[in-house]
Image (cartoon, rainbow, N blue to C red):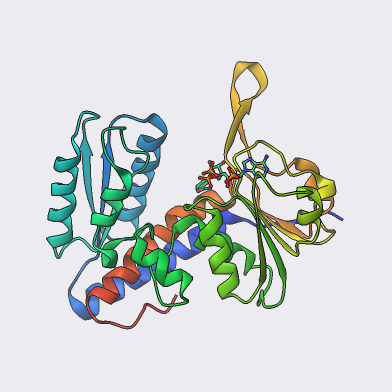
Length: 293
Ligand code: NAP
């Protein structure tokens, strides 16, 4: 069997186009443009690249970008003051504080200070709790993208065995909650799981969010399964250069029914879902029904 490749790039481009249409409709009907504030503290090169592509995508979707770049020496009080200003600014529909933050800043304190209605990363405890309670919530972007990609293969995930490897607050746990909300039968595996290969082999839908290059082997995969590879791992490539691989080994293509490539799978969906969350937040803040996307 050769797996169908789930083209995250084109699915994300399609979603971004729909968000842009939603932004246009909001402007036409309400005379109003959603805005996304992205706050970057310090000079982490990976974060800088990511923040640049976010700002570009925000502008392309017709939203207003509000970028705040603060020095690595920024104190916690200063960052909290900026968050308070953004919370109070009606032009700002969504706030994203890029992680990781420098050591002198308490990350949880900053996340908790963001207005939950503007928490487009879905990391605020109120949104985490609402997701776990099955209530409408702003949900984390990468997990939302994972489930959207799985649903391009299966109209319904109801009753399917879903295995998520990884239990981080950013990916593993929220993706498991979203799969549960889709009525899948969900197992969360992690570094203490016994017989990980056997657990993975049960999965109709396997989500790998581990951060270990090509750890999931072909013989861990149930023939025909849908595999969502969240991993982004830099490994040595040809000519002294490095290349990016996922958490799932290339041989998985011979066993899976469908899988996401790395790069070009989950990655592009993260930014598209951030735009979607910003549009959803803008609608909710105006008392409007969620955008039909
Ligand atoms: P993380 O916080 O490091 O969590 C990794 C999880 O994997 C942990 O729950 C850990 O288990 C589990 N794990 C580690 N080694 C394992 C092993 N040998 N066997 C079983 N489980 C193991 O990482 P993360 O933030 O969730 O990110 C995971 C990956 O996704 C990374 O490669 C990251 O770069 C990537 N990522 C991609 C995107 C995107 O947009 N595509 C977004 C976010 C993250 P324990 O809890 O037991 O330690």
